[in-house]
Image 1 (tube, rainbow, N blue to C red):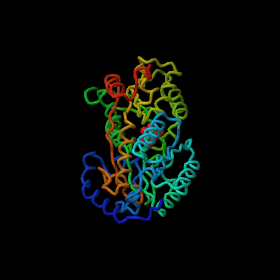
Image 2 (cartoon, rainbow, N blue to C red):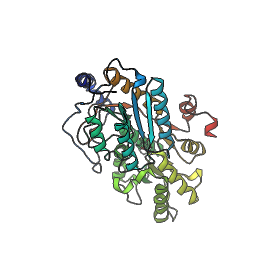
Image 3 (cartoon, rainbow, N blue to C red):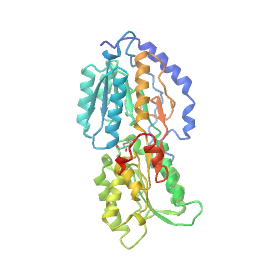
Image 4 (cartoon, rainbow, N blue to C red):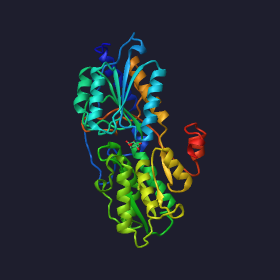
Length: 390
Ligand code: BGC
């Protein structure tokens, strides 16, 4: 269907949204960069997104509107859930859906999104593999008047990104840092405690927020000597894990154990930005003979089934719970608003600078699951059945 309609309305709607929601990002209590630590990159942009995308138009049946949903990989449980939830919710709202997974291959995702643009999709929802790699195809989407919503991960270096919906990534990091601080009781004990640091993929903008949020909590204790990093590996580049790979994390942890912990040095905590990385760390620790009783505090994110089982058996301490149902519903609300020419719900218009524009964002709030609350959070809420966690 044609898309060259009513672009002025969307510009007007966006202006209203920006005015209405301008102050909300302050509530997240974070800086405009991923972190206040020096290690974190800054990508200043001097403009807030002025939208040139086109609403889908009035008088069009939703069944004539096709939404392209590009997901990075089926390898991680979360993206399967994200994709399935998005498809189900969009279809329930009446839309056609083109859902694609790219096997973590940038070139595959590029051609999938290109096909969505040329194949008649009216709006795109993209969870990127490498947020900076889709510029050319996003420009084509913009030319065709197709609105683009960045899903979970920000699309970088492009002015063709209309909106962004995610969980508060900086808060994910601070919750992980606070969990380590509180469980080692850093404010009331002398230490020192040994910690190692792992974060995510350097091509994923989120990883810098996770790392930055956690380091903003932990760095003062590292600076004062209460937390010690025996490997000395602290900078983002040193602790990143390409593709969030379990195998890479396992290899790095094995090397750290051999090099720094072989003589009986106690490992008190490991910061891990997500579950796939935490699983690699757990494998390495188990392989080196650690048992649940002497496991370090180990953080994670996503509440993947393997990790929740590890929380239950004592080989992982916590995992950030980002209910994928919440994010999918939020994105469907965004799509509906765009299609219906209504104000698009956002609550942060300051934080997510993609290097070219500040993208209007809806931030959902993350929480953490641990041994004390996982039943309530994950089973009582219907996210998992008890059987799935056995
Ligand atoms: C997501 C995390 C996920 C990670 C690896 C990040 O962008 O926010 O939830 O664990 O990617 O897929």
